[in-house]
Length: 204
Image (cartoon, rainbow, N blue to C red; front, top):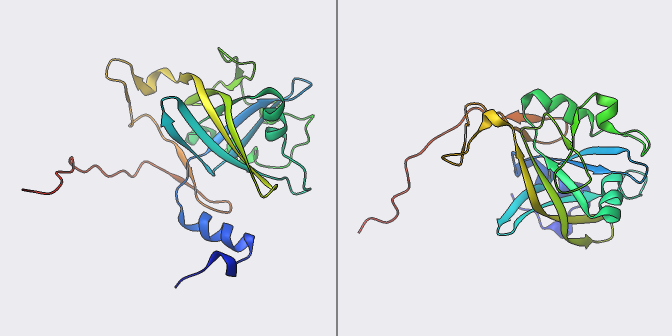
């Protein structure tokens, strides 16, 4: 079957994209509000796109009340944020942080998540995250005035010690258990992995 985007409502297009582009990595983004409240919110329209400089991007739509989300307001004010990755022990808290929280209530504080200071920006990171990247805003793109694409340049990395081999510059995959986003209230584990030998290309 086929669909033309023009024949679908925005909600139907979202369902078509979110149902098949799977699994998606999750950016658990921490920002800091004007009164010092730390916000943490997950975004799954997200990925990394470049290593020189290190760039990531996530998409944030408007809140249900039509206002911009706290994450976006904080980034627009400070040009700083941290992308924290989520593994299985943190999955439930990450999901709960996607709920409705007023600006004066920080998700980490409410959910009992430990914070740790960043090294090069004011925004703290989630202390128990397996991996975190301190970011400065690199560029933003306004899409139809109801969604903002936020691109960040990674300026410092934090890695849980037991996950990384610094000599080989490789992750210990048997110890890293990231969570992927499916759709609606569904997530997936990523431990069922396939390894292929190196591709040989065309034989001549």
